Image (cartoon, rainbow, N blue to C red; front, side, top):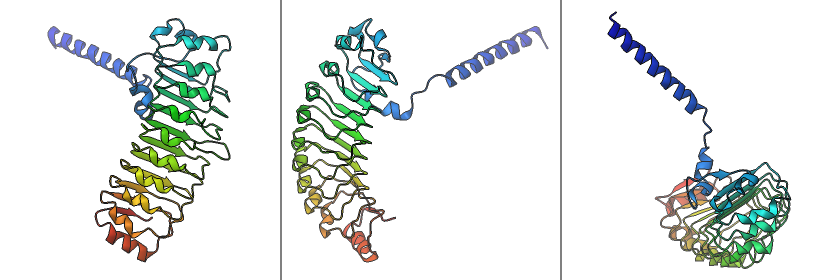
Length: 305
């Protein structure tokens, strides 16, 4: 082997070693989960900014703090009053903080766009929560909320509301819920709610409604006013029938009614001309009824099992 060839092999071995080290380094970098990547926490407001997980650190330069995640940590009572200095805060996510009430200091973030609380057994939200007038996204998971404050619908810029795994034995939405005129997405998952307010139909910008694992028995006829609704999920509820007004939803392309007590669906379902998929799994639908539905919805995928 010539000296030149040996030198070339040595260089190749060196670069292979570097590449191997880089591969190992990248493989062990913290990876944001796919679920996290899809969270509005990351895509809302100013992107690619530091995410602060320690309040003391955030308070060192509060004007430059846009996103905070306070997870698995208790709030220092000496530092908590100073949190209002985070005047630029746009996204706030809290989890497992051992609180049953939301600190009033949190209602002072006038530029807040995203708020999420999980694994905090909140018993109520303060009426001052409505002061967060710029909120676009609210997620309330693993709480003990029995209701939302009557002032909540004053959040007239809110695009998405998600309430999941509420541990209270009953839950009610405000009767003036329809004042959330900008709402496009509503999620109620494992929430002990048995009715929706009549004003539900006033949220005319709703595109997606996901209600599952509830005690809901009746859908208000006002649902027929949700002219922009595209996806409607009413799974694992206690429904026996659907209001005829639902069949006015011309833009509906997905309807899921899994695990209810529905034996018959009105022939008016044929007016859902854009319906692409209908899921009736877990309902007592007879063979005759299935044949009728196939005839009424020839271009629709219908799932019975």
